[in-house]
Length: 491
Image (cartoon, rainbow, N blue to C red; front, side):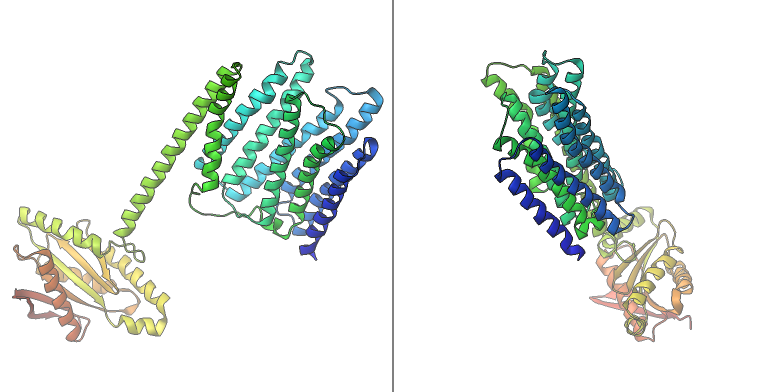
């Protein structure tokens, strides 16, 4: 039933709005119609979260408070007009303006619940959009209202507060839209409500700029913007997805999608666009404001570019690190090890020091996997890597060579010392497992591929010899590795 309530509510109120637009009502009938639609939205905002439990109630209560105050302003304005005639500002303006802080607080709570932490990229994007819209608000609403000599001081304050409230809602809406969190139906209904409300304010601002007093169907059409915004808020609260609209999503930095990039581009063009319009009209009245807007937008664009470059650099560094690190064990992988071996050999050659490599292969690893499962096999690999790493010196180099094979580079270590190291590793091998090892000491002439080939041949000799032992490679004759007859067998 809950899944149908929001549909029934939306259908009923939409029918009421269409009837409001179609029938020429005025006076108290028009006011009553608007108040009923507004208070129905308040009821929906209060009823929705009650069914969803305590989580997230405060968000919807803030929205309900804003819609209630704004709707009550319609009724108060009509009463005040009957008692005192048309006047501005009036008590009704206090009710109208209460919507802005109430909705802004609700959005701030919702944003906090969805993101959980500050995302500087999102803040810069939201600030860019807000700066562009704020410049428009200054040029077309705030500045004209502030310089209107027919208004009292209170009238100036009230007139300026309306567009300032719109700028605040734009900032919060941009922060919500650019931030993290799921995009479920309740989220989109909230966004649609904000857009509709701001569109209504913009339409009234255009009417004021044109010195046009809308009446009849035109007035009802402009009022319908706000009624639709109330209705969308109510539908968002009643929708079943309202219980997860504030759910936090822990993901990486959000990239710039095409709609986001288009929005930011449009915001960046606002300042030069306004300047071009005033130049064409041969009356640049807001030159300083436009200049400051250009500087702010330019700085925000540069800041965002720097953030994106930093993110790209960090991601590139992470990719480089991942390309040289084994994901399971955290050890260097085969690529990193084969790059390190020639450097270690050159250092050993210059210093005249010995160098030994050892290849390790966990015995019967496939059988272990088949018996205990792949998670247990992964745990064996990780625990073995951790245990063996604890036995290494800082100059040694342990890497995962592939599968269950590991390889160790032992700097300044001869064959006898390497055998001792291998036995220390054997003693700490976890879960009662054993390994076979092939050991090769560099002769000072062979290449890195040749010493690896000798160690690999010694390893396979250890496996053929019964496993759980270490075989020392002796020489390389042609392409065939010859292993020493001496075998270290712990058994």
